[in-house]
Length: 272
Image (cartoon, rainbow, N blue to C red; front, side):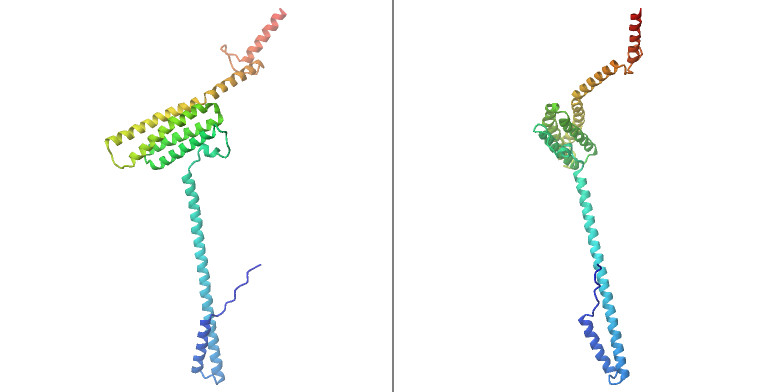
């Protein structure tokens, strides 16, 4: 149902103005003659129409102005909401592996490790925002990436938990301690022999730590590598036993061809 259109009515000041104008015209034009009366009424009605049109125009402009103001306020509100969403996305950054997987529990042995990893990653992300050196920021990113993968390994292979605990309780806290020291010294805004030397040593130590942490991550896959090798050996043996393997031996022929030759030789010996 359409909304009813509001009728335009004259305001009290406008009515008072028209009455005063009509009385004034009565003194100018004789109201006792027919022509004077008609002229008086015509002018009064004309003034009334003009006043009514002006008021209608004013109300229309007022409504249009309010609509534009409301639209502008709405645009500002939408822009603010969009900015808040972008800011929230930017400040949150990428979620850590523990945060992504925190929706369910993985048991009393794994959950504390994931929480410990989350705390360490959040602290390193904070340090990355305060440390202005791009080279150090890149190294922090590498350590965060390794830490996330080590946390994930606790879920995929719980037998690695002892090694992962050692990483989180000794190596990683020392790295974060060094990064905090670097942050404090870099924020001093001055150069000095002790400050420059300490910052250079920490920067160099980060390279050593990254290389060591990559080795630690690689060592966590040792059990999986052994399992994979065992599965491959078992698969090859099954394929060779069924005569389906195309893997070549040292003579340059495939296992299937070798099995066929052995079968032919055995048949010939039986016939002989």
